[in-house]
Length: 268
Image (cartoon, rainbow, N blue to C red; front, side, top):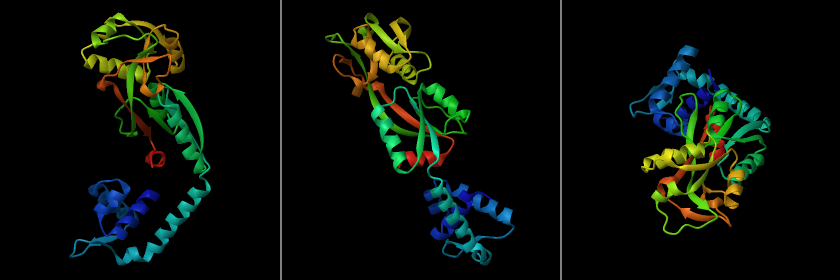
């Protein structure tokens, strides 16, 4: 029997409802019902029943162990709080805002949670989550995997910027300018290529002059006039100037982990 399942049982009894307990624990009513049935099968006793008012109430057998179940949860919470100074390994996509990274680290620090941070491309972070090398990551691509919890955490506007202004820019002019892109595997690069193709821009015709692994180096190259770069709007600072800001280049970031509670802790 899992600690989570005991907590769900106690929530069902407190709320007198599978549905309400499901809302609290972010499960469907049917999932809550199955979890309670599984506990009953494991303990070989009936724990709850439904009365004439459709309320879910504890059986006599449950009442006999109710205090013990509460004590288990209370003890677990105490132990969890005592070990709250654990280290969380967290990864951030290279395109994620430095300001937001600091905010998350500071937030966890206030809760006595130390962090080990790595900043690499989204594909690498996704593999690290799958291989249990890190606990949680924020990436710029969305992938479906039943082993990983995924939730949207923020959005940012991507723009085309460069040192030399271009008057009356339209998407056809993108074929005429030198571009600086991130290397293969970058979540930002994949996002840009995908969105440009959706906008009917033939990406195989783009003049990609440089492919650089780190965003900071890409921005420095653009500042020196080596080419134009797609970057988050908030990072466009002089001498760079905004050249193009299509609505289609609004990028979402996702927080991923195999542990739902870590995601909740970072988002709350």
